[in-house]
Each structure stands twice: as structure tokens, then as C-alpha cells.
Image (cartoon, rainbow, N blue to C red; front, top):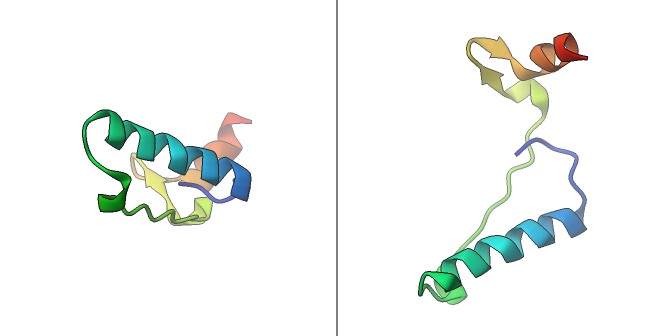
Amino acid sequence: MLEGRSAAQKEKIIESVFKAFEENGISREWVTIVISDLPQENWAISGEMLSEKLKKEK
């Protein structure tokens, strides 16, 4: 995901993912979550840098 989310936001996302697994019969002990905060400059969509695409949309 793109960088910029707070620790509280990440914790909420992580808990939601764990709950989704548990609702499907998979114990959270079997789940590992890694969050990679990446700068917009490290993403490209449809051949365009995300940072540039977002600048155009503003």
C-alpha cells in the first residue's frame, strides 16, 4: 500500500484481515501479515508513475 497511513489505521486493517481469515475457518496463528509502505514514486499503473498520475488528477 502507499505510505502515509498511521499505526492505528494499519492496526485496523490488520485486524480486519485476521477476522476475514477466521470467518473462513483459518486461525490467526496461521496467518502472517506484512505491510509494505511504498512511496508513490515506486508504483506505476498503466505505464505511468503513480506520483505523476495523481498530480494530473488534482
